[in-house]
Length: 111
Length: 113
Image (tube, rainbow over all chains, first blue to last red):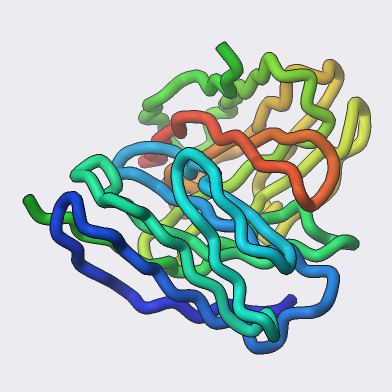
């Protein structure tokens, strides 16, 4: 499986934008890039996904590099509720059901 | 409300006493899965099911059984629990396809003494 690399932790001030990076240099052409997050004491929660183009939804934006070897999850205005572990996950067309969560990035949001 | 429910949420049991953790979803999803989460090891898949009567092993299936007799339910069975199965368990479901988001239950914290 193609792997992802994320920083162990990041810190942000409340109401500031947050850019969470993910490197996936061995990504294949059919891999989708998914982001999930896990708030304390909760199950993982879907955030966003994309293939080649940048994507926006009500929670976040996903910026995908032109060569697809990296991506960035953007939270436009961090709130205290956004403090969580964020996982960048590649899902391929053949075996894309299991989510390989890795260690993720622990985001701390300070008031 | 679309959701995945798990019961019980917390369970303390003794070695060897059979137990079942239930999982139910109300979204008509074909795909269902069980994960366990352990400190330092992250989330790992135990078993999954692509549809009714279709189940398969994930990365860490030893010591677990599952069944999928109905589309909405996917129970996790521990026939003879051992202390190394002490963990936080999550059930997930989704429609088929790598683009579809997975919905997770709230988790079941199991302690085996």
